[in-house]
Length: 393
Image 1: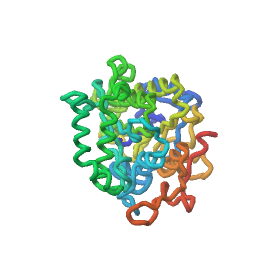
Image 2: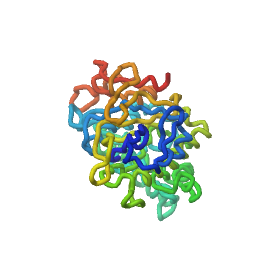
Image 3: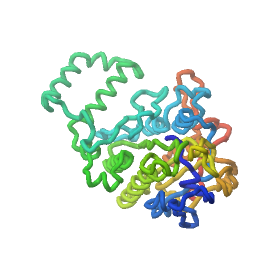
Image 4: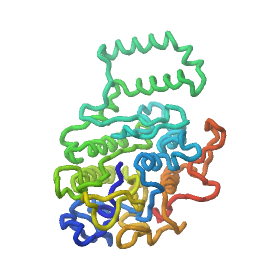
């Protein structure tokens, strides 16, 4: 969140007199790489496919952050009731949940601003957690497990009939879903193992909030308890001022925030690869737009810009390369790098995610409140957008 500078990270450009030597550019797999900002991810380049022909539709943070989460214009038709991509995956994969799987299908880590389930039932909303060493909060009761079970049984003895007879989508039905989902997380040793971590593990992931979120994401995937979509947010990229930390080296700048990203994501990739989970897990990383190329502003920062990047890894993605290219300044797309031969848009990223998950991205749902038909990907009947199949070829 905040729009990371593409020209300082995954579409590195060198601007003489502006780019500091501490960026340490090196060519890896034919890609120019900022080893002074992302040294550990440099070792992961063979697993990364970097889309460099992506452009944003707008340059306003809130609008852009919502756009990439719902895969459509938030102020367009049905934009105000559009679900998060994770919520669509939750409802489309609902029948695949196995009995006894207690974890939420859609987990949002460090993502207080995650867009919700829109018009879909609340059971498909993101379960929002800020990971902490103490594990998931409120999974026990001060009165003990036995007394809690007595209270639970009493609750259902009193209003069980009301819950059973409430129509689908009603407030009572939603509350019942929440209560049962919460009950499945309580006194559950699998939950405790997945959401709790040691100081040593946290340090391996960089000892940061982002690193802890990556660590918990990995443990949740390993638990295999029904979670299919995990959203992790790392904010702070709105670097209008002092992007290289010349006036405040210890503040939030491309080096200090880059370090958090570098350590957390590289360790996540390494652990998923080691466990064999990476081949079944698609990782997608992007911001809401990019930042101005060339020299810095008078405030020593970079402002908003439409040219940006998206990084893919896992799920069979062929890494070690870039798809598409920008000009020598990073100011415009010069090569699209895919069959549609145009700039890639957030809707194409959405279609790619659904396609990789085995979801028919051209599907239209007819359960929206207005009966207009909700396209999983806008205008799919007109073939306006589509998956980036070149990631796998």
